[in-house]
Image (cartoon, rainbow, N blue to C red):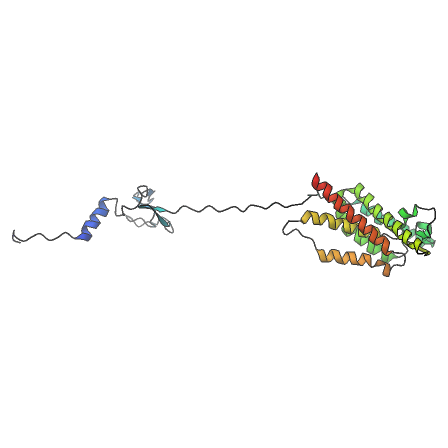
Length: 287
């Protein structure tokens, strides 16, 4: 080659390759200075954290390279996003009754006393008023208002009332306790008998009223009032409203099948139980 021939222009690709080699082992300068922080366990070379295989020995470093994002003039690995925690909404109006696991002695005692009196009445053959039935027209024997809810002459009538008490009186007693539940059920039955006697006496009827439909409906109404306060605003803790409604309808319809059952006694007993359940929920929530 003659000395007068001008030199060939430099190869741009070769210059770029030399610059990459001098700037850090073949990786762009636009990457951050802290990128060479991974040591290959096979050959001990320091390599970029953004590769999956070692460029020197070919050893596998990771399953996949992290995603890159541009921050200014550098490329850095994306930071993992923090998951947002869902805030639990408060449950408004929940009184939070403590459900006891003790035996429902009040409910068991009411059913047992009624069953024993029915057996004795059937065995003796005496009239219902002998075992505490409420006789109308009313006389001076006001104590019959408390005994009439326990008096039965029909096994079917007692069975329906006992099932209602077992289903709803048990849940009521485990929330309120044995003494308050006993007082409430007796009050529902007695006040229901009082109202039924007053209405029958005003109509000049001569009849005998007995049975615990007022107690059973009072237990249902009180249980509904307490459970509605407990599950208000709570997702997935509702109760079977259809089943409760069916039970209430059966108890209300008892006078159609049991001659000594009275509709007024049942409705008044249910109203007393419902008011007591609302009052208990309000007092417990205030505490």
